[in-house]
Amino acid sequence: MKKVLSLFICLFSFILMKSQFTPTYTGKPIYEIITKRSGVTLGAIKVELFPNIAYYHTKNFDSLVSVHFYDTTAFHRAIPNFMIQGGDPNSRHGAISTWGFGQAGQPNVNAEFTVAKHLRGRLSAARSSNINSATSQFFICVANNPNLDGNYSVYGQVISGLNFADTIALCPKMANYTNTPIQKVEMFITRIGSNDSIPNVPILLSPSSGTTNVDTSTSIQLKWNPVNGAVFYHLDVSTDSNFVWDVIRSVNLTSLTYYLNNLNSSTQYFWRITANNGGRSSLSQVWNINTKTNGFNSNINSNTIVKQKIIIFPNPSNAIFSFYNLEKGNRILIYDLNGKTIKELNITEPSVNIDMTGKTKGNYIYKVFKSKTELKRGTLIVN
Image 1: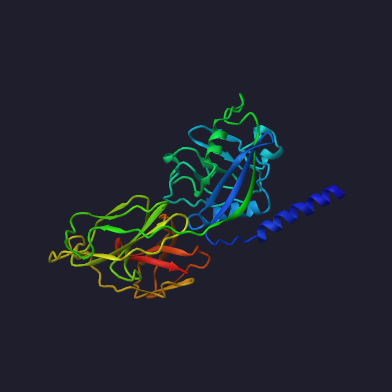
Image 2 (image 1 turned 135 degrees about the vertical axis):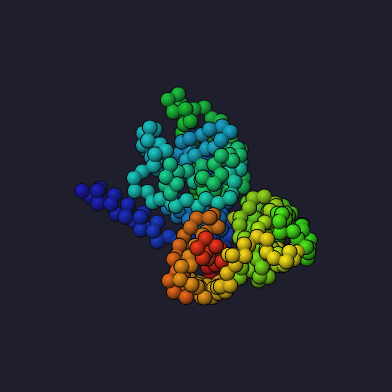
């Protein structure tokens, strides 16, 4: 009875400790993964995580490390030219047949799919067919795996010791479990610091700021220079030089170009770029282009032009955004930067408050429609 009670107290303490642990990040937290094969140290794999790209996966990993959850769990799946996977609590003492299946009751982490690519050295969350089923298991890519992009949550990368991941991937495997190393490879993970650096500011290349007579019937290519270590770039395009009103594009990209189309005639457009390597760069310069006058707007049918002037205030806001000058029948859609709809409202009054309490800080896209006509789009900034 005393043993059962003691076990219950330990389990309760672990759950309480995990639920109360709130990580703080001054940058990208760094961890050392000591790998041991049959008790003999192979080497240390150092990784840094991306709280600004996948906050909840970073938080989950950090909280598990804080209670030594990963210590003595195994890299139970090791595939050359693909990846190594580990972190299942079953791999401590459970039967090998249970490794990789996880344990009932482990808290799930919802998917944080982004444009971040599964390049060699990237760390990502393992999951089942349910996209929101990630728990403690993670994998490290030992090769580029583009087939995983957009389907698994990248939340870190190896900064040293990737050769030890290669060693694990290449080690001899069991006959009955073809991806499981014959000699158990254990991990011991410790948080050892943080990388507080941010990437350089991207330099805009073309078209030159102030370019005029841009043809609205074709796409115009925006270009910027590569930034060393950037995981992706963020582009904003707006008719407002302060990027508060009428933001028409707010997208994450892994390329160094973007084709801007469906522009209005006789309009000045402003654009800027930031780089993200797990930390965000400062804003680039703001450049502008000016579309030519066609005598009419070739991209908007005259029968669908609406004079409705919609105002959003305050923006940025900590939580509440008020939309004014709406009409009955309007519809508002709110998306995150991955295109996932998080709010949809059918309007019956001239104004409405949209509550973003509990949403992760950052940018969200809004669109306002009248029937099938888009009246306005822009960015809501949650502080």
